[in-house]
Image 1: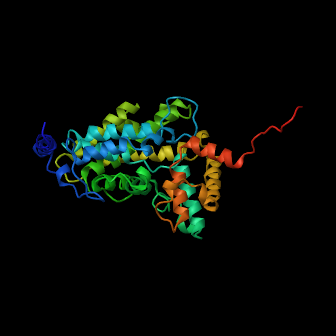
Image 2 (image 1 turned 90 degrees about the vertical axis):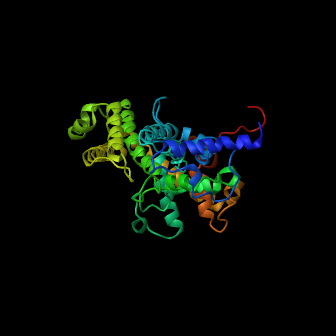
Image 3 (image 1 turned 45 degrees about the vertical axis):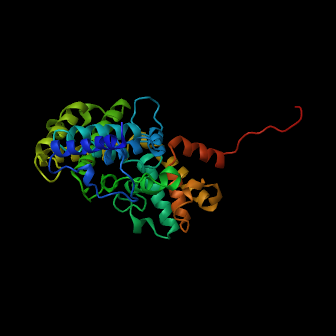
Length: 358
């Protein structure tokens, strides 16, 4: 097969997008571009390449051992950042398909949206923000601990990973549409593409549903403990609630230049989110280990700031005039168990045996 014939196959895929997808979709041959110009792939579209790069990168594999909500749960069925990312991606694709939007772009954003999450979930994110604030001689009162005011934000770190840190400092060189969707999956700014907006909603649908499921599995609540009003609107099981929210997004967003839920369903979802925040995320028995995780991250941060030679070389390529950023990059990339093991090796005395007979 000649190179000319091979190249035509990608063009067939690109033409298929124009034939099938909605005018509101993002088309892979009309991408804004990449950080660094490169030759187009022979067989795959730009967004298909991005999806594959994320799927095969080290940061994606590490999500398997990063906390979603529950720290160090004893059980094989609690969500991790990896399973969360897969569930978000599945929900997002189920929304994108009937809206005739670009599933490849949607999938790439979904798989990559949490690459920058720290060990121990949002606990680690807040602790790194606190540590960076101290380095910059800012008080926590000045910085604040709301998601919008954090110094260290996992969504921005996800973009930093794919742009600069992966592949030993070269980055993955993803299209700007994917990086934009990753950054805008949380916070007030909307993604530039409808596919990115879908992932932002799919993220909320996923965690509201599976956090209830995990909390129920842990014995922290029952279905009857959930507020009655949202259950009447969304359903009385995780699968019913996911189906209701997905179908509502599809129905409400048909032939539209924005992705949204109907006010009634959105309010019910946010009521469930508030319930989880008040009863699971901040006050439940599952959070009793969080102070230890806070202290662990805090101690590691300031240890490495004072021992930069212990930072792997790949984290010292960028921001050489800002060692605290290099340390944050290193710690954010750790899995829960690697962070614990590193702390133990550095801070916990180990038994040793003197020579000679007893």
